[in-house]
Each structure stands twice: as structure tokens, then as C-alpha cells.
Image (cartoon, rainbow, N blue to C red; front, side, top):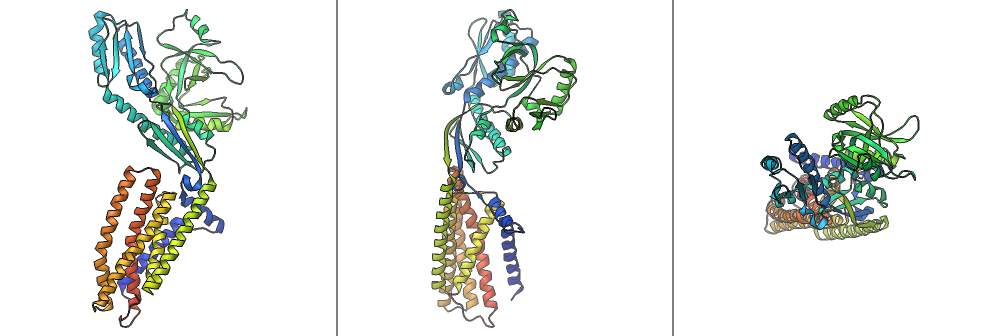
Length: 535
């Protein structure tokens, strides 16, 4: 045996060992082997069972948020420039007319009109178009190009936030994909009861801490009466909602929050050592901690409202200077505290989500699909192996070994890449088996032609592999190009088919050309004079 053949055999053995390790690891018991197999071979929703959720991203919320941010900034800029105004508000578009968001400013003195226009153009002119309604009133409307950007950014940010939430929940094999211009598709393998995850995904989790300027009051009207019916522009009224059967309360809060959810560095559920109840603790970033420390130091014995999604959770009294942490109390059980912590870590949604479709796939259907796929795959392999052994004699063993290694590499690649195996993916594996056999048939028939032409065995094998190689590469490249288009433009199941087929094609080139050639070299090296070949 030549040194070249020995090196090739060592490479093949190394590939086999790496593949086996990727699939089952280094188990010390049968139970550990089964656990490693289940952990490394990830099954999709159609095989494992689970839930498929379709959400509509309520785009109007994102546009309203953009307008509210501009209103707050514009109020601050006008206050700095000492420009008075009577009112500043936005309209309230629905989903179908989200792009028609507009901001109305009234009561700008005509003597300040030039300064007002300059402030708007300098700060917001790249996004908003200003229209003069009359001498004192103006309207801002969003540019069409910016509206498209807001829509795209909202979907992208929503997908990113939802992915963080479901990954933090422990559903790492789930997927979140855009569907159309304003919908997202959430696939949750292995989750039969999605009630809790649905609540988790639809919670915006916008956390804000505000200075309390008055309250609690029994009603919004009572809060307004405390200010003689006129609410200052720097204030707002928010309610707490009903708790444990008790009616909700209302507070007058500062309009600008001290810190927000964007200022959080971490959040986690903790259990109170005295009461035993669950709470959600949070830690602020370095910059936010400095602001929070300055504020709490200057407002000792004042109250600070903890607001989540525009509802007051609590309004504790500041008893000492606080730097970088806080606690949200009265969360109830562990799940509520953990869900809130997860929502805060993931960040707030840019818009609310409306669940418009929900489908569940039972594990029995997945088991049937796996069983049917395995039966069809095994039946196909047996038929192919039998035909190869009958038609190509001992060389059929060569093709069979290459076929087994091809399947081993394919499964190991799915494990290493953390790819999810779906029913279309099984179809791709079965198709790969057919293409692997086709490559061996091309090589074997070329060798037969060379032998019939009178060439020696070694020369015939050399010429057979050399002439078939370009044909194999050509067929595989064209198929891979087709798979790329399937992956780019196809849906989830189609992408699964494309991924498994591409991996199988790369493995096929290695097994059909490298492994099969090595086996022929090893067989011929065992003969004193290579004069015969069972093919």
C-alpha cells in the first residue's frame, strides 16, 4: 500500500470520527447516547410538533411613537427658544392609514414664525414636511421615503425583539420570519400550549420611571381638579389599573421619564427574603445610573412611579440615594417576575402585535412523518444497494460504503450547523441518496468503457475517475445554484429542503470522488499484479 493511500485512509477515518462525535458526542451510557442524539438532531415543527403563530405588526403604533418623540423634542426646543404655542398634538390613524400620521401645532405668534420654521427645518426637516395652515398654525407630515423606512425598521426591530424573547424563554430552535410587509411568522417546535409565550410576545414591556407630582386619586377627573382643571404641559395622568379586586388609582406624573427600559443593563426575578413574594430586580447602565443617582439624591422622601406599558405598577417613596439598581415589587408568582425580567432584557416592542393566525401540530403527526420518512428512506437505500451489488458486483460494495458515509456526513453537518430537520429536509436527504448513486454510476460506467477499450485496470480506474469528475462537478454545481435560489426566495420548508440537499451534494463529491477512489486504490494495492477488477 502506498503512502498516499495510507494518508487518504487516515483522512477518511478522521472524518468518520468527527462525524460520529458531532452526532452522539462521547456518551458513557445508553441514556446519555439517546439524550445526545435528541439534543444534536433538531427536529422542526412538522416532525416534532409545536405551534405556528402569525402576528400583524400594528404599524400605527410605531408611527404614533415617532410623532410623540418629535412632539416632546419640539416642545423642548421651543421652550429653549422662548417660543410660545397654544397646543401641539398628533392625529390618531388606524392600521390602514398609518402613513398619514401628522403633528398639528397651533398658536405660534406671527412674530416668531421665522424662528419656528428654522427650528423645525434644522431638527426635523430631513424626516417631516412642514405645511403652513394659517398665520399661527402649522402641520407636520412624514415624508413617503421616511414612512417606508419606519415600516421596514419596525418589522426588523420587532423580529429582533421577539427572537430575544423566545430564545430567553428557552425555545432556541424556534424561528421568526417576516411575512409580507407587516406580518411576522413565529414557529415554536415542541410547544403544544403557546398561551404563556403568546402573552410574553404581545407584552410591549415599555418600562419608565417618572417623578410623582400628585396622587393617588380615585379618578382622572379628581386628578384634574387638583390642578384646577388645567394640566401643565410638563405633566401627564396615568392610572394603575385594578389590582386584587381594588379599583385603580391615578397619578399625576412628570411627562419626561427619569430612566426608561433602554437604560437597563440586566433584569432578573428574585424572591423577597422576608415576605417570600417574587420581585423583578433591574440594573441600570453606567450613564443611566449617574442620572438616577442625581435624581434620587435630590428627591429623598418624594415618590417615584414605576410605569410599565403606561400603567403605574407602584409609586414607592425614595428613602435614600439609589445608584444603579431597583426592584419592581408585587409581581405575584415566579412566572410573572421571570416573564417581566425577560421582556425587559429583550427590550420593548416598537409596535404592538395582533395575533391573526394560530396553528398547532401534534407530536403524533410528527411521529408519523418521521416513521414514513424513515420507511421510505430505508426502502430506497435497500433497493439501491441491492441493485448496485447485483449490477456492479464487488464494486457495488464500494458504492454502498460511500453511500453510508455520505449519510453520516450529512447528519453530522446538520448537527454541527445546528440546522433544524424538517419533512422537506428528509425529502432532500432521500434525493441526495439518488444523486450519490448517480455519481458512482457515472464513474463505474466510465471505468467499464476504459476496460472494454483495452486499458489496464489501474489506467482504466485512473481514466474513469478523471473523465467522470468534470461531469459530476457540472451536475452538482447546477443543482447547488438551483438550491441557492430556493433558499433565497423560498419559505421555511423549502429552505429546509435546499439546505439538506446542498450539504448532501458537498458530501457526495467527497465520497464519490475521494472515498470511492481510495477504496479502489486499497483493493488494487492488495493484488500483486492489478489485472482484474470486479465491476
